[in-house]
Image (cartoon, rainbow, N blue to C red; front, side, top):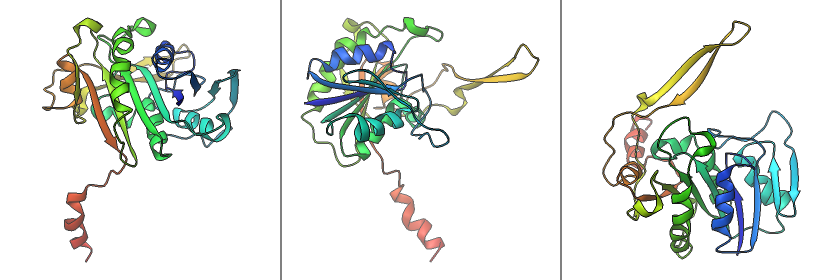
Length: 253
């Protein structure tokens, strides 16, 4: 089985090293094509305003001066000798839960794989507090990654679908199991804008996300993680709200 690994944290991210070890339990035909630098929050964006550079680090390891989507496209069109059987994106440093999947470069790399008709899985490690940097522990992802991926290899993926996996921020032995759940939704007010002043006296801003008190919807990824489970959520790329079609069409009849 040929596997492509990618992420949005960059080619040197600790989570990608963890993903390599997980993937090695399934195959020795592993290819890596990931952003040269961190691209968190890049979503499903393409680099269109500047050239994209491809750098080869060794025989099957490449980096791209662009987004996670760029990385998957370059892997499929320029790097690999043939299409992979599986695309794994991650392991992301931080959660990709609920509506955050729309911002996520990790999930978007898997989206690009799904568009190409390739079985694609995004994996993310939740962490317990902000400001942990590269000290985020990936122990839960490393211990439970194989347990999640192996069953998914035998499940038919519908056309233009992918799977989003999140590992809770607890020790591997404390994880209660795996739940297949719906995508949840956060409270939109959780975001923050942090203002500062640079040395020349000009204002700048950081967008941040901070924890808030909320009640996750039942049987959602947010609830599963809160309860100490690995969350597995099948996602679809068709965003059409079918229930609205008839009523909206009447307005234009």
